[in-house]
Structures are given as structure tokens and as C-alpha cells.
Image 1: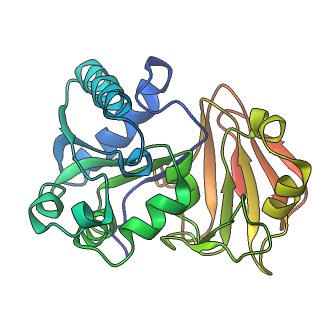
Image 2: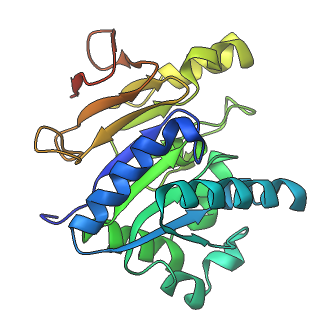
Image 3: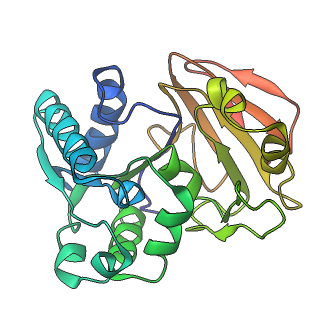
Length: 247
């Protein structure tokens, strides 16, 4: 755990020019920790989308990799069966940055848990590679993912990197997209779980400097929007460069 890498919870904007500074900083941190100048992009959360849409994510990631002068590793993990493949898992080893992009958070978490691909992601991150999750990727890193469509049903188990934190991405638009009942479900988190909202083109980041640590739930804000503490601490909006000390 002493060598754990940087961690970013991103509200939206993976691979876009406006997030290149953040992704570059995460990559640089991984390289400083002895990892290679390579950028693993895992599109699994969008795995049930069209082939055209998956090509879009690959091309978007390639453009960002070119901006950052890094090697793109677009990992074709679209199903749980793909996540069970040892050859795909081995492609993650040594990468400076590993990124879980957007889509369906429940599908992402349920497809990754207890697979070689997830084991490789977590092992590399715990050894110093940077790890980022955007939108669905950020949600899946929590202990659970709420079920929006069947609110009476229990949520999907998450990847449990942050067992006491629940992330609402796209926060500045989120509550215009979903019914009030679903919004309330997000805030009705289990006892001891802090809920944060991360605006679009914004991230909560731990481990880029000595002031922040995911273990202590201490994050810095990066981006044009804010990070909102919604439950588990005093409600507050934190802006670029400010530090969140969560409980």
C-alpha cells in the first residue's frame, strides 16, 4: 500500500483536449514511480454499445495519446469473457496510466470483479501506476453502484477501491437527466458512505502530491467545475486546487 498510485475520479471528459493536462499529470506520476510511458484505455463500460461507438472511443483515445506523446494501449475488453483473458490482463502490466472510461457502471463493475483484467489493474495501481475512472468508471470504483432503473433492488457490488465513497459524475447536469426519485436514491447511501458530486470536465484526484491520499479520503480538485460534498460531511462545493478532507 505504500506504493499505491495516483487515483482520479472524473466527472466527464476522458480523452478530450480539456483533460489532457490532468491525464498528462497522472501519466507523469506513473512514470516517476517506475512505470512505462504507456496509457491503457479500457472501454468495458461501453462494451454493449455499437462497434461504431467503440471505434469512436478508440480514436478519441488515440488523439489524446498523441497529444501526450505516449503509447496508446486500447484494450479490447468489452465483455466479462474478455476480462477473463490472461493475454489482455498481461497487456496492462507496467503502464503508467490505466483509465476506465464511461458507459454503464453496473455492467463495468459486474464484468470486471474477480477477473484477471481487474486483478492486473488493481495490482499495477497498488504498485504505483496511476488509475482513473471517468463517469461510469468513477462510479464503479466505489463499494456499490446504485440501481437506477429498479430502485427497490439492491445495487451492484462495486470494485471497492473506495468502499466509503460514492461518486455522482456529470453532477452539474446529472439531476436534469434522471427522476427525482433516482436522485434521492444516490444520496441514500449506506451508513458511513460519503457522497460526492463531480462536475463535468472536473476530477477529484488523490496521490499527485503529498497533500492527498485515497486512504485518508483527501482529494484535490482539478478542472473547470467543482466537486460537491453531498452526504457524510458539510455540504460544500470545492473548486480548482482546493483540497477535500472527507470522512
